[in-house]
Amino acid sequence: MNPTVGAIRRCLEGAVPSTISTCAPDGTPNVAYLSQVHYVDEEHVALSYQFFNTTRKNILVNPRATVQVVDPLTAAHYRLHLKYLRTETDGPLFENMKAKLAGIASHTGMSKVFRLLGSDIYQVLAIDPVLGPVALPAARDQHLLPGLRACLADLTGCEDLGRLFDAALQGLERHCHIPHAMLLVHDARRHRLYTVASRGYPESGVGSEIAIGEGIVGVAARERTPIRIGYAAREYLYSRVMRQGFAQSEAVDDLETEIPFPGLPDSSSQLAVPLTLGPRLLGALYVESPEELRFTYEDEDALVVLAGHLALRMEILSHAAEQHDEPVAPTAAPAVVDGHPVVIRYFAADHSVFIDNDYLIKGVAGAILWKLVRDHVATGRSDFTNRELRLDASLKLPDITDNLEARLILLQRRLAERCRFLGLEKTGRGRFRLNVHRPLKLDAAPGR
Image (cartoon, rainbow, N blue to C red; front, side, top):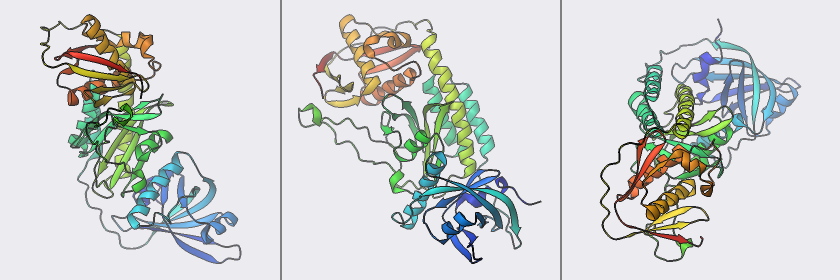
């Protein structure tokens, strides 16, 4: 029996260049190399359209082509008999192929030459094996299915979002041998993603942001499709510029509000998977490696399954935190408040918060922190609930689809990293406590 497209999917990874043969109306054959043969489904593949060359002219007149692909592990050759259907110039498939081509171009120094004009969709009419010697593939060290099963089991036992985020990244390292990973949550109102958890980096980068459509993570989120790159692609890498420290000027516009995005300085393989629930975007899972071609389509498939379960658990836990308040935990002995007063400055324009001129957080998380410290200073109150935050009109929180619990986790982790004298403590489902160990002096700045 002839193989199926799925059975030779490894040949479509691009490790060995493919060739395409077409025919002109007068019968003149033409053979050329292809940058990409992309798996679409069991009956279709997509070829990269980069130039209006002889191949393109022939296809528009005679929509038949033969493509030869090679298995990089066994050296087995296959001929795909194809029929041209259409060209796509936008959408998930196009963006996926565009990102992959950018990686190939950067790796070969051809970024100015390799530019994707479209994704040509072909129907696979038949696949013929080419007779010849075939090597036995080396056994893979990884066993993705057992690793995926173990990761999903770890998620099931998580009762709050913080533990869920950590369990997902720990599971990737422990069970799938992926030590560098991060999770980002969607801020629909600001059209951005913000980091809530990371693993394998010197700095956590919690609170760092990426615009939807920026880099591999932003593009994967915008198009709702996984994107995998096997080589370093300059246009899909993120700046690692570190924050310069305390502002020297008193001008508020000079205060830095950028949290460095975590990441490998020598990342050569990247895989970004969106977290979706129906049409809604919840966030993104991103993994990377200094090793070229580290992630295969099997890794991509496994992480897509993991992302689906992660998105569902996120939805369940975030709603439970707002709709069901557990009894508050017994209050411990009051914290000792001592030392010099800490100045907390707040800018209403973007809800940014600075502690002694050191940037902490902005956006919804910043607005929440300002409410908490104001209430604490005014009344001495320390215990709060998710539900009351949602009902507080002064906060102007996004609608219920926004993940308030994720904002609180972000705030809790930023405080843990930056402020030993100020912190959030979870006291039950939908409840938390503000712990203050130094006097607070509040300063509502006029603007930024």
